Image (cartoon, rainbow, N blue to C red; front, side, top):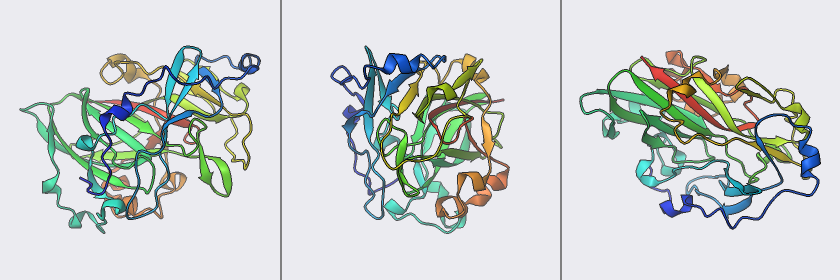
Amino acid sequence: MTNNIKKLAPVLFLLTIASCTDTSVSNLSSVTSLYTGSANVIEGEAKIKVASLFTCKNGRSRPSPIGIKKLNEKSFIVPAKVQYEEEHFASDLYNECSNVVPKSLADVNISTVPIIEVDNDGEVITGYIFADNYFELFINGKLIAVDPIPFTPFNSNIVKFKVKKPYDIAIKLVDWEENSGLGSEDNRGKSFHPGDGGFIASFSDGTKTNAEWSAQTFYTSPLYDLNCAEEIGEQRLTENCDTNGVNEYIDTYSLHWDVPVNWKTNQDYITWPKAVEFTEDEIGVNNKKAYMNFQEQFSGTGASFIWSSNLVLDNLVLLRYQVK
């Protein structure tokens, strides 16, 4: 567990959304007429409710704001509604903010990782997780662990849980944003540059991330031309959308879908579109010790980085997988 993370009261996540201002503009309806998908379209930045969930005391961290975007009577927490509470933080595999910086798994005392019980007569399973940027792990609907660092610096985690097979894995993935509600950050010489995601995990029972997992996106941004987005069946596609950064704000739109209340357990969501695999080079982990020091536990097991179909623009992605 991390020791240098400021504990945030759970009340932060019981955000009052009724008081938010409407971020839509008068010409939004004419612009959204170009969009034919099922998402709620909102223009502009979010109203910030929490300036940053986390500050790294031993290194540089990007702000990890929580904001609200409102459309008529509907409101959406961006980049996602999270259960960021210290009591659920995953144990550190590598975390420079808490001075946990092993050079390999041989330097990690795995026996100190707490075991979260799902089934008292189940098998103890160990998992290794690297998320760009943030994850929440659920087993059979039970919260097992959350990422202790929402944004940066990059970290990796180790978890243990006790469960009987078959069991269901549900994971909430968030590509955090520095510019709240705009899906962008100050990066690569641009003030508004879309970030990118990525997730990889392997488990001691042989389970690993790959294209057999299901993935669905629920928050996409930034979009400058709504005509570039399309839907084919359950696929929410933005492959034709611009992913370049800009130095000054231009009209920016975001797509929001309602997250099903029972997404973690309903078997209907096992049939979401299949996850897309990405290479280590595409994710850009060659200079990240949180990954490279434990590469054997990740790609070395045959696990692949996965995400939805758009690694750059899709900021809230939910995963489902059933272990037989």
